[in-house]
Amino acid sequence: MDMILDEIISDHKLVFKKKSTIIAATAAAGEDHLHEDQDLVDVLLQLQESSDLQFQLTTDHIKAVIMEMYSTGSETSASTIEWTISELMKNPRAMEKAQAEIRQVVA
Image (cartoon, rainbow, N blue to C red; front, side, top):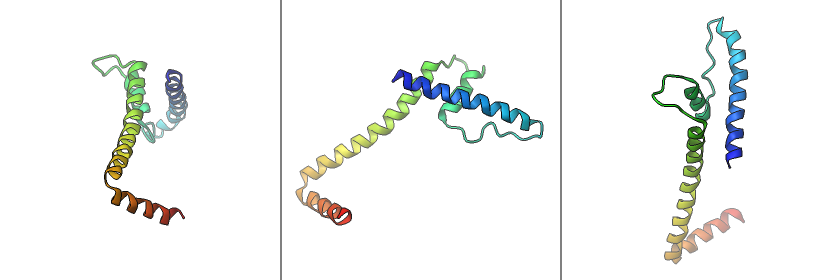
């Protein structure tokens, strides 16, 4: 997993470097497009490079945030599905209605 996170971060750094080079040319014209189309990783990498923080933002910190975002999203979905199935098992009438609706839509 660590290699995947390293790849995500290095890809973002590469894109940001290329984007910065292109934008430097347009900055002379008074245009600032550096902050367009940024995602969370881009923002964290910019914070890492900035010296405005009261603490050092390391690559491990960024990896932890990425992992937290992924796990939070998938855990929520899994918990919802698990809860739904357990409720359907407790209520056979609701289970039959759900099965009938699924068969009607899928068939």
